[in-house]
Length: 437
Image 1 (cartoon, rainbow, N blue to C red):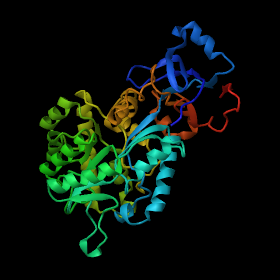
Image 2 (image 1 turned 120 degrees about the vertical axis):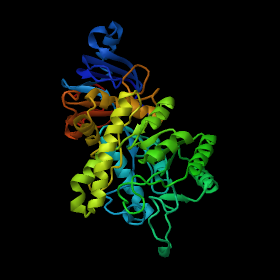
Image 3 (image 1 turned 135 degrees about the vertical axis):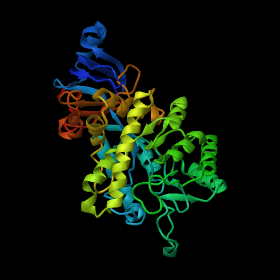
Image 4 (image 1 turned 30 degrees about the horizontal axis):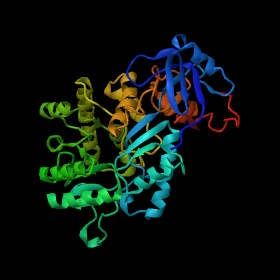
């Protein structure tokens, strides 16, 4: 992905730098050739730098008294999910060609929503790998992406829902395994696909209350350990859909690099998690949306009750993990009919209003923690000198009202590598450099 040439200046706003520190009023951010060279109070900026910012060659963004923060990170992104209302929508509703176009549209939307980076939480076929390639080559707009391709699950587990008599398998969405040897073979297929993350399904979910509910195990420890050994051998990381307590423990003992959900964590699994600082992505707004809108989509009461239990357990686990010093990322499971793409920032509001995180903690989770999960925190995730100028400029005080991040109409600019990619100014950039906004 190309970075901007020249100087970018953002001023007249408070800086929420993503580190968790208090906002800096009357801040100045300066980037040179796509990298930040200064971020802090105007009053302490070097005189020479201030001279540079007044140059007619600089592109200057007026934050309009609002907030300057890092580009957000969607840490559990399903680019190939689109208006999913039933299980078959995930794997057989559309041909792969159309799903690819839908994924491109979702990537563009994510960027427009202020998400300059994302980690895939699973993708039909390995569309996310090629989506990443297209974004990096500037063929299309989208977040900096970490790909995971097809997921891995035990036969008969949560993701194995097409009965054998249909003879259609699940190969486009998930690789099904029986035993550690098949688990290793599945990872080796993903090695050839070029993905960075291996997504597995150690446990079930409230969506399948009859045979694979949220307390059910869908993979054995031996299968999970084989996945980790093989993935790590090839330089890949492993994560898993982990709701049941025993599944969380198995994943941590097997050497997983991250956990999705970590819903029903106990003291032993918390200790294991903190020992290696394994990050989690709770993805709880999906549970709330399922409870609120499930009836209109025909969800059985048993499913809704399961989501309620998951919501409460997941919120408590997330609170425990953050308060104990763990790493919590933001994002998850958007692309369902009742939890659509474009609503990503609802997760942030949920964590402030329901879970009890502070706005600064939540923003840190949605920026720096997301960058850590992607393994790119030395490049992105905070507004600091030396990092890429991936930035979000918002009208208003996001610390006082985090719901502003849900309103794209208030985005002055979404900046990626110093280039204005979306927001109010995206269509107002002058041909010659100069004042914008």
